[in-house]
Structure formats: C-alpha cells, structure tokens
Amino acid sequence: MTRYVLRRLVQAVPTLFGLSVLVFLLMNWVPGNPVEMMFDRRLDPEAVERISRELGLYDPLPVQYGRFLWRALHGDLGRSLRTHQDVTQTILQRFPATVRLAVSAMLVGVTLGLAVGLIAAVFQNRPADRGAMLFVLLGISMPVFWVAMVLQLYFGYRWRLLPISGYSSVPHMVLPAIALGTRYAASIARMTRSSMLEVLRQDYVRTARAKGASERLVLLRHAFKNALVPIVTLIGLEAGGLLTGAVLTESVFGIPGLGRLAYEAILYRDYLLIQGVVLFTAAVYILANLAVDVAYAALNPRIRYD
Image (cartoon, rainbow, N blue to C red; front, side, top):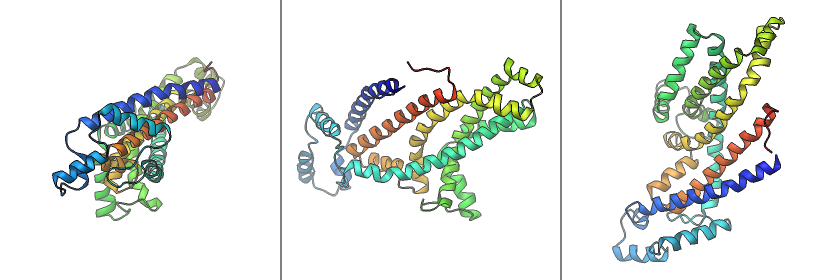
C-alpha cells in the first residue's frame, strides 16, 4: 500500500507540470495587459509600459514560465499582480471557506443521495422509484447558479427563513450547501440505485433471504455494503468537482473562498494568482482521488495494490 501511495504521488508530478504549462499559456494568449486591468485603464501608456517591464511581463514566455517554476519548486507561487499579497498565503486564507462549503455540500449530497437511491432500489418500478428518478433528472439538469438564485428568492427574500449571503454561521451555509449539493445528490442517487439493483440480484442475497434473514438485514448488511464500492468511487470523483463548482456558488452567496478568488483573478487577469489557485485545486483533487482508492481496500479486501 505504501509503495502504491508513493507511486501515485510521483505520477501526479507530470500532471501538475502539464497543467501549469497549459494555464500559463492560456493566460498569456488572452488579449489585454494585466497592468491596465489593475488600474482600470487610468494610467498613461508610459506608466503601463514601465510597470509591465518591472513585472517582467515583456520577457519571453519561456523566461517567465521558468521564473514561475523555479519559485514554485521552492514553495513560492509569487505575488498577486493586483493586490501584491503572497499568493500562497492568500490561497491558504481562502481555502477554509471553500472546505467548509464543500464539506457542507458533501453532507447534503451523500445523505440525500444515498437515501433517495436506496428508496428507488427497494421500491423499483413503483411511484417512489419514479419520484426518485424525477429528482435525479431535475438535480442533474438544473444549473447550480439557477438553483442558488431560486433558493435565495424563496427561502431568503420572500419567506425570510435563512440568510442569502455570507458564511459566518451555520444558517449562512444551509442554502449554499443545498445549491451545491443537489447535483451531487442526484448523481449519488442514480449510482446507488443501479448498484443496489445489481447486488440484490446476486445469489448470496437470495441465499440470505432463503435462510430467513429479515429484509432490513439483507438490505443493510448483505446488499448495501457490497454496493458501496462504485458509490465511493463516484463520491471521490464528485468531491473534486465540488471545489470547481464552488466558483459559481461562492460568487452568488458572497462566500470569500477559492472559487470567488479564482473568479476575481480571472476578471483582473491576475495570472500568477490563477496559476496558484489552479495548481492548488488540482493537488487537492489528486489527493482526494488517492484517498478514495485507498478506501477501496477497506471496503473490499479482494482489492490489492501490489
């Protein structure tokens, strides 16, 4: 297991390197000068020229990227072109808000998704199953920002049950967690239903029923545990997606997390900050998937990583 984890970590290095090159090239191909964006085009052309040269923006692209890579290898992601704050510190300051939102959305998604999926599998082809599939269809089809605005309109503005922005207390996180977790719940519910239906047709489930085991015991001990492996896979993959989905949710609800930071960095073409956020998010995504792979062995002892 240790060798497998180390091998996966080494394999992540070329992925992060390729991603950093791609983001660097994309940001440099975007038209416009970041200095003009920083000062809202209030500087005269000579000042823009002087500041751009001081920041090294006119250096050849390989020189600029080599400079960024050398600093990144020493743990320095540079300073924001707009705020002049350290990029690493800025990311670490914003990351807890994103983690709080992602964990809240994950709790909503996993709880709701497993419950809906189990109900759909147990009551297959009945009205409860059709209602569950309608929830899945709507959950996957509705854009996150639209769900967020509908929740704000009814639960925050008209009925005044919950705050519509901020993240200082638990009630502030309810609507963002539902908005971000609904799509997550729909995917988990669909996977739970199909995985449970497949397991319920296995011979050992029929044997358990033939021996007189209660339906509750058959579902929870024999079927649900064996159906968890593909569900855990999906949970791990979608957990990384929660970080990227947080961009819209944080912007709508005014949460100062990584998603909103990335949006502001793109708006002002602060490419050092964008590169830092992308690399940090990719590293978290890789580690989340690695944790899911390690969890396989705990759920299914037949899986080995030698």
